Length: 371
Length: 175
Image (cartoon, rainbow over all chains, first blue to last red):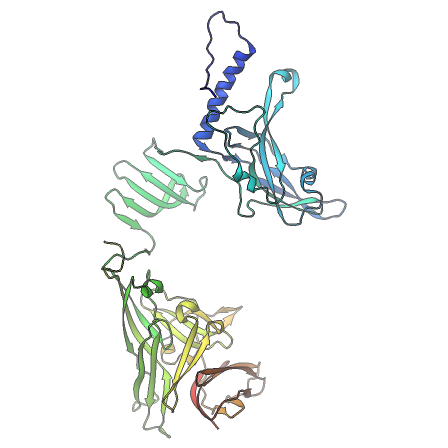
């Protein structure tokens, strides 16, 4: 392999076809290297599988017509695959690969690949159409996508193009027709184009990451500079605005709209209190788990006080029989009541309730963040 | 306060409650009661009978504030509509009829017949470390049910839950 050769011309030169072809190839090679090394291959735009309901005139059975929407992908060789208009999938093409009796409801992969085709019309001999082909796979063929190996650095674009499969989704088959589409099966779905960069710089002073194309309510991250630099995570609101859920200011201050959970810093104490009946597990302060208590990362201090029980008369005596908390944090509280004025005067026992106070603290020797 | 209760799904009886100050109590049985909720009562022999209700028998709900549930949880029930618990606890009628335990059966009699539908009954009878789970119902227009159980002579911790009536936790002597 050699370095890219750029054609050079001089006055009076007789141009051969090879000279002109080299001009084109130099540009194609540069574009392919950019696509391959500055981007991750995948679908860049469109190419979704869509359906429309249909009725079989012979059987009156319902099925769907499957269409690939217009779009563009870049394959692993750096070649663009452009689908300029909607493509209706042919059931005969599916049957050629999988037979007319495909397994009902099983998702069969649909791929897109690049092909070259001789031009048509008066310029047929002088043009190559860089077009595409839709291929059906057999069950499990989607794993082939991950097994594809990009050509080594410096490899020129092959002509005709090397086959590179871009997964578009899956079709389901039944009664000789397509019955539906699914985007993902067996944990494999379409792969979308990405960016390879160690540094991303915004010219406007604000850099935004979104999980979808400007859909309100979807998460977004904004890094902004200027007089008040900050990092914001929030929900996209349209028009470029993001409603902040978490903000980190330039001085390190963190602001959040929701509650905070995570590792407690050494020395911090969280508190909860309330009332619980006999047998119930005492609640722990928000952010503290029973696993943290069990393995000693968090120490829990508990105070329980038995509550008095309403009695039929003011003369009744009551006494807690058993008040405490088990090792697993379960409340023990039973109360005996004796009413000497009742006939007959008997002692009764019933489950009671306690007022509780739970303090959770992180000892310095057992983990937690130094804060 | 946020009030969460654990109740017996079959009969609706509240068997435990937790209220948290200024927060939200858990609403799942595992967090509130673990794998089982122990109901305990002393019996005259000096022992403590433990009657565990399995988490499979229990459900949990967040309900409107009801201070009385901490005085007598068994006196309240959770009613459901389309399988979802109502936010307000129902106060259940108390009863004092004798719970009879002979050698072969536990007999429960409530004060009034059920006129609309049969009342489901769940009872737990402790015999040492063994706990007998009894399930039945009081038919329409009747007020008594006898549930088969074989226990030795002596005192037994008994929990009786009759649908529509307050739960009873007693020490019962086998006659």
